[in-house]
Image 1 (tube, chains in turn cyan, red):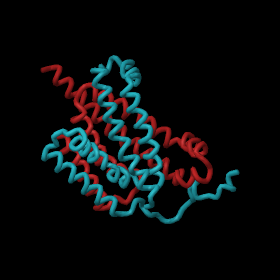
Image 2 (spheres, chains in turn purple, green):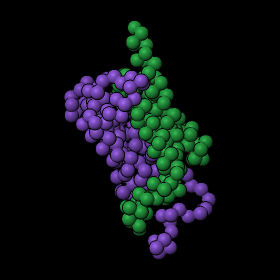
Image 3 (cartoon, chains in turn green, orange):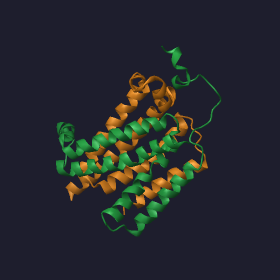
Length: 142
Length: 131
């Protein structure tokens, strides 16, 4: 693991909860959508909060794809779950919301999970096989 | 009363749809990215346009994006029927466990005790954080 990889994991961690929060806020403005009115679900993206949420989720997607290109899925998902902790800390210290005891317990469990997985290797080592495209020298492709 | 039951049913159906489509999408995208290789190295060697083109030509990537789109709209549907404090944690925690199982079966990842513990701790923590 190097600084660039930690930065990519930080991107996955931050962009997803912010994007989800914006989506939730926007969907509360849009209101209930029936299964028979699928068109309204497609039109929901015209709400500015939903639109901004989508922009953040695109940032998450780019970071997530980058992380999956060098780490296992079962490493990336728990390692990037610190976003839940981040949201709770923002709620407590920036928005001065009350955070219940159960929530602090949840935060400690998530943090333990992150600690467990990041202490191990990020990728399953396998015997050498066909090289991926990124392993080949650039000259071979031009 | 009936409206409340319909709301709960729709919420749990959407959670189920999110878990299945999200796990399938994660597995497909992970397989696609492993085929392509380290995006950072590749971008440095060949440029961003080349990386984007490689991703768009990978069928696992396209299928994975399709699954993620289904997951996204299932989430929007669920959020329109119930609180984010139910939909978010329930879908996320179940997805963590489903992903660990799917990664072991389909991606042959070495999911050792440490990773199982991490997935279960995070899943339990996410549920508790809803209270």
